[in-house]
Image (cartoon, rainbow, N blue to C red; front, side):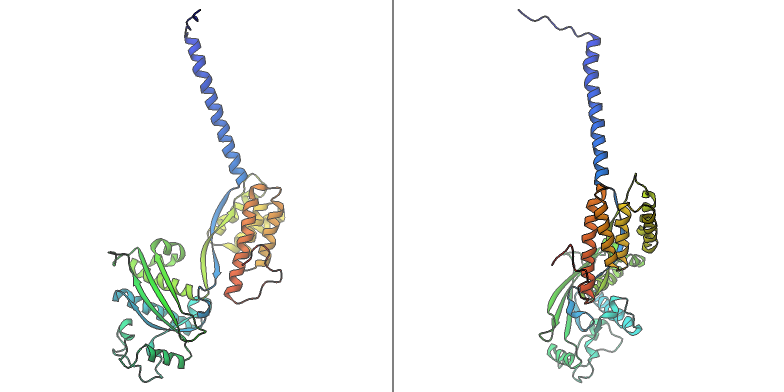
Length: 355
């Protein structure tokens, strides 16, 4: 028996269309609710710039003198880099500045080894860097090496400016491959490639952005980065801060975040400490205060605060992951600090990292 035909009345059609529409709206609201809940459980973060000590890539060069043997490449660029290296280190060494990496490393010309009479300059004192590094045929690399040893210098340095093929005049990127040559078994022989671009400069050396000539900006930055690879230096990094909401003291914590993002870490730390006095269960304040203590190299206090954040984040799970990450980050920075300045292990030892 055939089924009777279905008559689609206007009311029936409206019901069929309206029901799926309501289901879609409810499903959408449910998904949005879960997304909001997940974001709250994951915790909110922001970031701030922080300066930390970094050990040299080649530790044995720290605090020593190095003879510059020349830089290959386009004369204008090579001369400018060489002169900038010599000028920076010479000026800061004479001033006795020790808070800068330039004050802990000294570059020399072969002509500074004047106690050896066979080393004579071809050009006058007004010549460029490359010309002043030229020596007579009598003074070969071996002669310069011997003179360096007599002066107690056991490192030579050569460089080569590199550009991407067809971009010799690029104002976006500059690379130099350095070759460090040790003159005795205790001295290091190693290659050291160094590159900078405008984006890197804007982040790492923001003060150089005031240099209007982009080529000059690249040359100055390549010198700074070269020295930072050879000696103890200060590195600018990004660090995650906790950004709490819906808990007592959250607005004060975020106010401290704003101060830290502007580089005012002592003032930010004071805000976070005052917040903890009123709300000792504020995990975000413990996390951020720990980072502030690390910023002033009080790593013992920093780890104590971070450990406290891990403990109380049991009751505030939205910050637990960041608290654990912060504790590890602090101890890694402490290791680098101890390595940079030749310090022994801390009394409390290394708790969360190993090498």
